[in-house]
Length: 416
Image 1 (cartoon, rainbow, N blue to C red):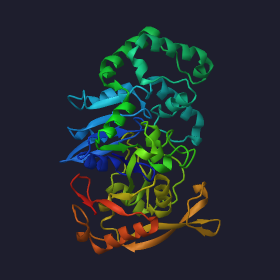
Image 2 (image 1 turned 60 degrees about the horizontal axis):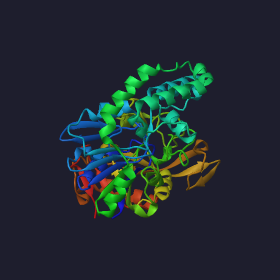
Image 3 (image 1 turned 90 degrees about the vertical axis):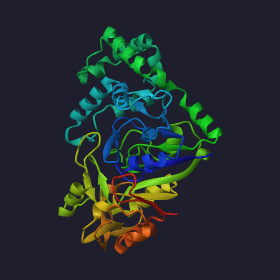
Image 4 (image 1 turned 135 degrees about the vertical axis):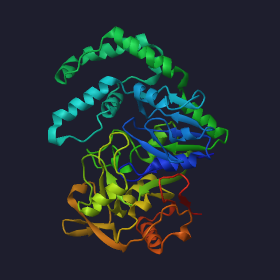
């Protein structure tokens, strides 16, 4: 059996949560491969809104096992708070013992460094994700499995502070009290110990037993640490290859790759965004689409669908199909644009350069439609909506296999 994969194709917030939740009803195991509680997946079921940050979106399938992989940086406080929404999670949720801990001091580092950057700040969530990953890469971090021995972990954390005292002094971060730290880590252990395991073996065994496995990541391809708009990116590998390293799978284990895109485009924080719309249309998209961050509540920057960026990201991820989200947000617009090329120093290009700051979008304009809300069959879509989707397929070279026509799970078109 192969593991199918869901990946964001834009700058995150594409609507992965709804698709993973919908597909998860048919899977035995749903796995989260990277990121931390800076990511948020919003799911609507029967009018009820669920906001998930660390717990995989398959949690709403009572028969699915949910796995948090080694590629995640895990805040014990965040996961404990999130777990409190659900009952009877033992046997349904597993956390990799190799995932790295995102502890309270990581948030303090994150926020202090952003303050020091002033107007050059990246625009992080301030939740400690970057510092936790930085420690992982510098081989000075702490892993979830170490929570099983709180006293030893506390000693190691205090020693780490002593070795880096000069840095912490500059950032005005105090060394934690060892006794208080042991008490806190004991709380974490009590809450999380039943869920900590070797998740790589768990997923391998599931595939060997022909279980259906679904992989989900966080953020989006254009925020990838290597392939995104650096330095305005996240701190992990958000592309499909990152799902392999974040869970301990080989490329041969990957089955169908579904790329998630909005029918328009959004971005949170700083960084280049060629198709951003600063007119009333951009404000209208933001208002109708309720474009505010699930985690931070920050307003998202809004603009038109960027076919060049989506084609680039689809190739990076090996997408077999796209899932087009929030098509209904564009209802009622007289004209709708797609970025079909870039202007780079007076030259028209149809590829995504490393420096997006230097390009301006070249648009094609399309006639709008009345409403797609609640439509569940492709043939019943307004003709202009179908033309829009077909143009996206032509420009990106990838079939649009799934179309969302409202936030509700059931309002989804599946194309054969």
